[in-house]
Amino acid sequence: MTGRRSLGFGTDEGPSVELTIPSRKSPEEIALRRQAAEEAAKISGFPSREPAPQIAQSVTIPAIKPDRRKRTGRDKAFTCRTTTGHYDRFYAIVDANPSWGGVGATFERALEALEEKLGSR
Image (cartoon, rainbow, N blue to C red; front, side, top):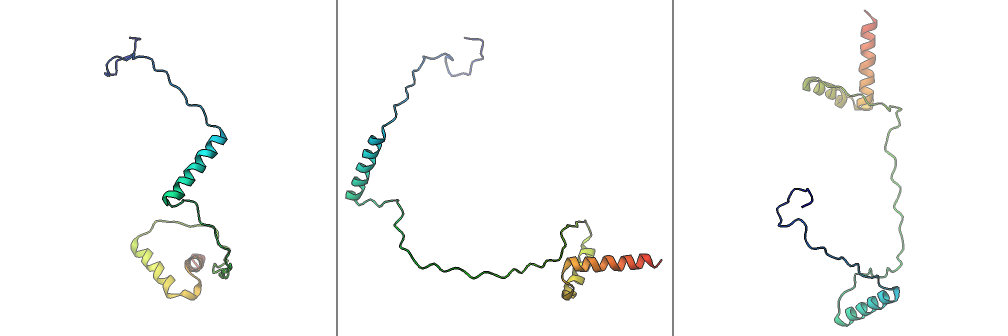
């Protein structure tokens, strides 16, 4: 023993095993083996995994879809925690006024209204 703890597999120091690495095949031998395999596959009717040659077809370019994004200049996210009641009330206002332009515009109007109310005190 060499001071190591036993792993419980009998003797820890087994017979030394020589590992041999097989030599690489030459490119010619690889090509011959590949050709022989292809011929054997053709004779036995084994289907090839090679993709079938593509026949040139007329290519149609899809129409470009219109850009439906609104460029509003709003590029900052505002996230806050609120109660379900306040959330539902805010989105009820958003849904009732679609001409305002959505959540961002409704938030801006609410902020302006709050500033007006606080400024008038």
